[in-house]
Length: 553
Image (cartoon, rainbow, N blue to C red; front, side, top):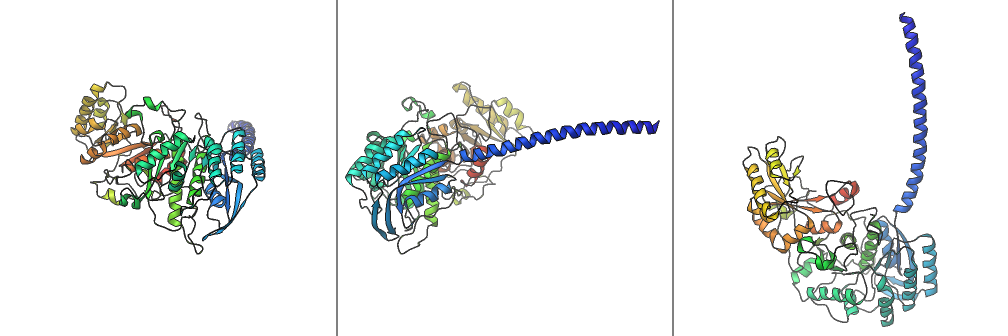
């Protein structure tokens, strides 16, 4: 009986193994087919994801500026660069000895050939050299089936202040190219040439940007701060390179005239933004203007397609032109810092990689004339900790999990829960007159707990100060309101900790300016817990953001 049972069991096992083998074989075939389809799709994704960026500019035989610098920068940002050459120069590190203009008919041939097969996500326009070339570029842009982002570096004046193009060419550039330009990047001399007047103060720069925006048809302007402004504070001008950015209202944004102070962000370009980086005193700055504009074009190509607010690009943290400007400024700053002299004259800006150091990343100057030195309590895990943060009191070690709750009742429960050391109270939908009493009640539970628990208040910084809470967490809109009303200084005097939300590279620049305890980033993945207008950041953005700041993330 035992042998018969074993035979039956063996036969049953054999049949089942055959069934499993067939199922496994079928599954493996399906996996193989899906894998092949996956590889095919992956190749298509690769072809689609690597954005194409055009450089329409002159050639620098010395390799430091023009299309040569543009291609370096475009490649560093992970894009594919194409060129349409407007003129060829004979030059080295000591100067230009000759310029050969490319006939406009051949410029047209270059652009037609490229657009047939390699349509751009963005276009950088540099030295156009002639009025005829300006007309050809206008014709190309007007025919684009899918309008690309357009960044125009109006190459008119050399670093030493000498004119590089004729008045006729300048007028043609303004007439034919500026109406298609999403962001114009003049240096101080070029802005003065466009405006017909000197810019000698920060107020002059701001008014000049408004005049360019209002009269010349561009979508945004970034007046570069490579040149010092003599009439203003000499220490600030010699210590920092500050660029001024101003843009028109975004088409998908609410009407700025109806925006309350609580709805504005410090990186909203329509109100004007000063980007600040440490000034690096170096002679090796050849090609900085070309590099900046092509970096902006590349960063824009990585973000959402122009005119399509419903989708995101390969980096959802690049949501607007200012995000691209922040990344480009970081790239140029790193390049100046690492530039070396190659010939007898000034060396070119070095080309590194996608911005990867907090030392190079710009902050937003709340006031271009002030040097904000305050710092909030640092995290014990911050690495590296800046010298200014070391001066703050007792570093903080956050709990492994931070509950975010919406009532004082939850705070009461959690304050006696083992393992909970930090609680964030996020009040939404309550009556304004009840907020202070709710926060005071919640702080009472924390203070009365036998355990060491800290209460963080979301957004309501005034009420948090009155209730003597441990810290506050501010979104970008509430941070703007806090800065406008002098709240940062009050929070520091009360020795409170500060966390700041960020979703984009420009918001990161704002957060860095406040020297906070930590910076939060999100959403990393799709979320249904709250409504956010930003797409998921993804893990790659987390990695990139982690190395662009010296505060806990």
